[in-house]
Amino acid sequence: MSNEKKADTSGTLYAPDYGVRPGYFGEFGGRYAPEVLIPALEELESTYIRLRNDEKFQQELTHLLSEYAGRPSKLTFAPRLTEHWGGAKIYLKREDLNHTGSHKINNALGQALLARAMGKTRLIAETGAGQHGVATATVAARFGFECLVYMGEEDVRRQRLNTYRMELLGASVEPVSSGTGTLKDATNEAMRDWARNVEHTHYIIGSVIGPHPFPTLVRDFHAVVGREAREQMLEVQHALPDAVIACVGGGSNAIGAFHAFLNDPVELIGVEAGGRGDGPGDNSASISFGEVGYFHGTRSLYIQNAGQIRDVHSVSAGLDYPGVGPEHAYLATSGRATYVRVGDRAALEAFREVARLEGILPALESSHAIAHAKEVARRLGTGGSILICLSGRGDKDVAEVARLSGVEL
Image (cartoon, rainbow, N blue to C red; front, top):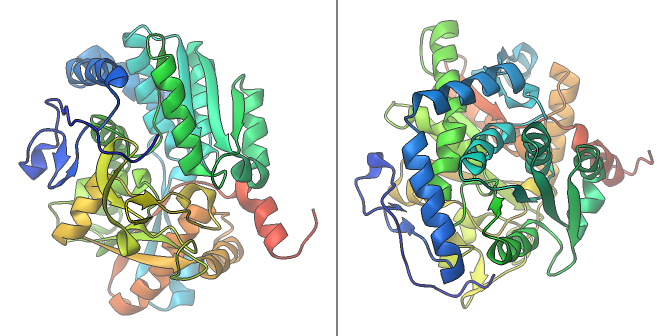
């Protein structure tokens, strides 16, 4: 879809924390979508409003998160990182231990239940790193939906393992060759598919992007990450962490981790992909370099030039997106959260460091957060503590890390 501004037809669901007009986070958010999608968005919103406080719905979702996805995910103290960095205590919220290997299963299960309630028979999704595609293919298999996942050709190349996992789960994977062949282009194609097949298809958007109500409901399905982590930190050290750090592309794992701490005296830090540098096309740091605009159905911050969305870059397929979710844009401009950027090289170094010191292979996305946490740990000192959202496991990235390291597998 183009980034042309469409008529705003926001509904009634909104985050009460912000006290703003429906469907918005401050000046960001809204529903800017083609008319053909408005009935589907309204149906999704009304279904979510009806079911989010429904006891039977919540019981089934809780059961699936526990018995199928494996929640609550563990909180792991990282003793060797703590010692090696010489600063604050480091705790990892282990979303990599969930079924399918990332936080994405939380949202996929929630939206699959909504799709079933709406009588849909087909699921589609976009994916970059492949983890959301795998999660969507997994819930499609679990509930008996037909499933098609759009994935950029460049991401198919660097995430071949996840591509094959989706196929094993019964999903079809559609490579997208337009543009840079990455997440932005896969999202474009998924939006077009949904517009053509809206009567029987539900689009499980994988991040806190897109037209209202997606940023809110995706946030709500991932808020379990922060709720669990907050309780676990209080249980383990009888105090909240000084900082919560998470990587940010569209921003689903970060908003899930942040939300339980919004009213606490806790530093919230989102880490964007600094890529190869600060030049146009060299990074995907939308908050650092973005401007207010309209894209994929919402008003937020996007890397653009004269209103045209620019190509972006990250070593991490999951962060390779030219925009950020509207709630993150609000948290950044309001000053409640801080957003920084970490480059490709530092993320690769963090990937190797966590593997060698803790015996954990983090996703390259999460490695960006880990790289910046080292600096924060030293700043806070030995009396502090940091919670890092380890959003996914790094098995999917091993082949790409090897290639970039000159190793032939």
